[in-house]
Image 1: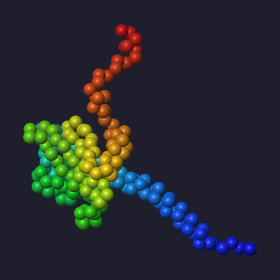
Image 2 (image 1 turned 120 degrees about the vertical axis):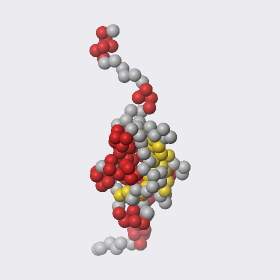
Image 3 (image 1 turned 45 degrees about the vertical axis):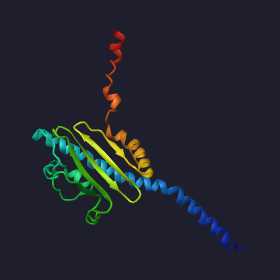
Image 4 (image 1 turned 180 degrees about the vertical axis):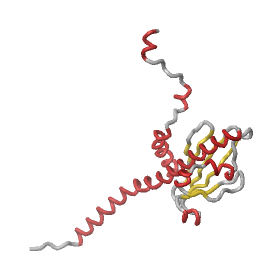
Length: 191
């Protein structure tokens, strides 16, 4: 005798699917936003490199995107799409694909701040998303990554993203950089 698929079983099946979807949603959202923030951070790093290359040739930093354009590598340009370079001191929009760039959708507004003496500066990327709003920044000549947000969701993302990206940046932490290197074990024993 064949058993029929009852309405009660269908409700249990639908309920289970809903529970799984609710449990998976935060991970999905995190994965998508982490990828976007990672692409923006890679673009930040490439602009910092471009600033340092510009400094080597001109002994000054610049906030003029047109002057930086020759120093931004082709690899960096493949990570996303930058809008045409604006006037010096203005922000430049970065998107993940050409259609996003055209409609001003998913992406980041990039800006450069240079110190008055033009010997240091900061590059930042502002994400004004529907759910997440945050700012990624990196400084030059000494790189120092930061992620800041005002909203609860943005702070959650910044905390997770900073912990996620720190090993990839391969930079010494501020307190580790100021501490002297310990003597090698052979030298310590001889003293």
